[in-house]
Amino acid sequence: MAILQSVCVVHSLHPDDGGVGVTAIDKQPVSGPVKVRKLGLYGDVQADRQFHGGPNQAVYAYAQENADHWAAELGREIPPGWFGENLRTTGLDVTGAHIGEHWQIGDSAFAVILEVTDPRIPCQTFARWVGGEHVHDWVERFTAHGHPGAYLKVVRPGNITAGDPIHIVRERPDAPTIGQVFRAQ
Image (cartoon, rainbow, N blue to C red):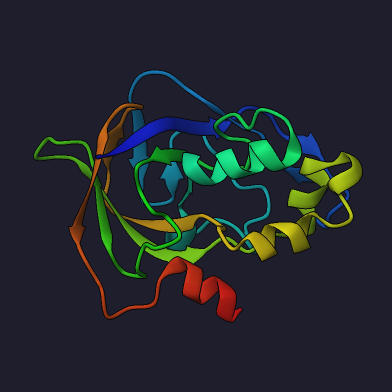
């Protein structure tokens, strides 16, 4: 069963050498219900709106199973939000999600519905966030691993809470997967 492990929003803005001058990649889990609106989660922000955010990239999801790979690879804990993700999932193949499929988070009649839109494309801001000895090869390593996480569009707003179940309520087996689109780019 797929579960929403954590809901993460921006913890603080950090100075960054990129064109915007700051980054909002520092996401951390919050407790209790979080409002999901057309442009993302209440309390979250995207600093570089040219490449992040907007209706088709309102929410970013990353799988715990893929974070576990990086924890072993980097020899450190990878807490929820470390990838700049809003949602850390368990039991859901995010890389295998098909473009256009819908995820329902929660079981109520007013549960949030999200649509899978795009893979995350790693950038130099992400590399600078990872830092240390990996700053120079992070984009290549992350790309080679092939599990980028998924951007999501908000189809039906509402509230989500860590621990909510995730159900695929509209399948799109004819559409490419996040992994296929990522490898094609």
